[in-house]
Amino acid sequence: MRRMKEARPCSIANTLALVGEKYSLLVLREVSLGATRFDQLARNTGAPRDVLTTRLKRLVEAGLLRKVAYSERPPRFEYRPTRAGLELEPVLLTLMAWGDRHLTGDDRPMVLEHAGGDGSLGGHELVPVVTCAECGEEVRHDDLTPHPLAPGWTVTGPATA
Amino acid sequence: MRRMKEARPCSIANTLALVGEKYSLLVLREVSLGATRFDQLARNTGAPRDVLTTRLKRLVEAGLLRKVAYSERPPRFEYRPTRAGLELEPVLLTLMAWGDRHLTGDDRPMVLEHAGGDGSLGGHELVPVVTCAECGEEVRHDDLTPHPLAPGWTVTGPATA
DNA sequence: TTAGCGAGTTGGAAAATCAAACCCACTGAC
DNA sequence: GTCAGTGGGTTTGATTTTCCAACTCGCTAA
Image (cartoon, rainbow over all chains, first blue to last red; front, side):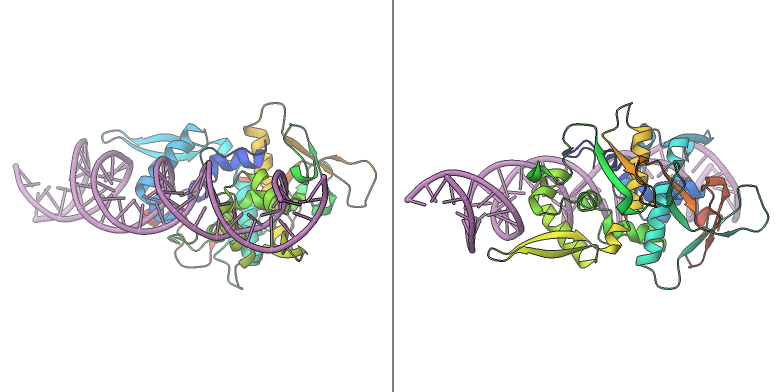
């Protein structure tokens, strides 16, 4: 995924160029959950070890993970998410929500418990929804209008340009 | 991406097995924006035409797109998003938001205008945020606690099992 | 009649993926 | 001490994908 044709300047494409390769998002899922070591990542994501090596290198270079030594002699590192890495969690949550709704029967593989922001006692099940911070409303497709800022954008494609 | 090792039962992995291949999400971006024809998709996503062919077939099989004839003689089809396909928009929005924040300088490639749900006059810029439908609050990483329901889950990985 | 388009298909080279084996530095058990 | 075991990779070679360009096919418009 390194580089795409970059047919359009687009933040979706740019983000996917970074984390859209096979296993990258699963690695981020794992480190967000606290599994930060090479063997855990290999096992939990199913990535071949060599592929995992190159993914980790790339995610570290991109600033989504950082290597933290947890042992010298022998040198051993774990891979912790940076702030930028953790900020991909919304992507993971929306992917999970979609899969739960469309791919899963009645028994979801996992459920996230959501504690109230006030640190309240009883939590409830997380039901992730994308809303607009500006107005607080849930985002519906029909309420959106794209406004291209960079050249290369034509909403219905070059055919209608 | 067809099948992964399926190291863990996980809706994120399952969803990515469907739409995680190169270009798939860009195709969904395009059809969500209204560019639904083969050549538009090829141009706007940058996907090689043969790859695009296999992606479209897969997305149609999976029920994310449907082929709609817009001409017989010669037979010509466009690829429209189904409801399930449109429901991936939250994923696209969160990817875009991340890219805008972390990859882009001051000039974002595109901005989405968000009309009020009441069909109000003046729109504002969309600022997508993931919230919890249950309590209405913005989701913060520290408020989440994973609860495995299927076997194969160990939060810190097999090492700590 | 010829040019052109939209929507693919085909062929062959280049790149990425995969599984398994290998390597190295150490640890702990005998 | 020695010897198996572990964590964290690297190497190897076979298999898949990807990529790009060229080609096809059915039709339309000049």
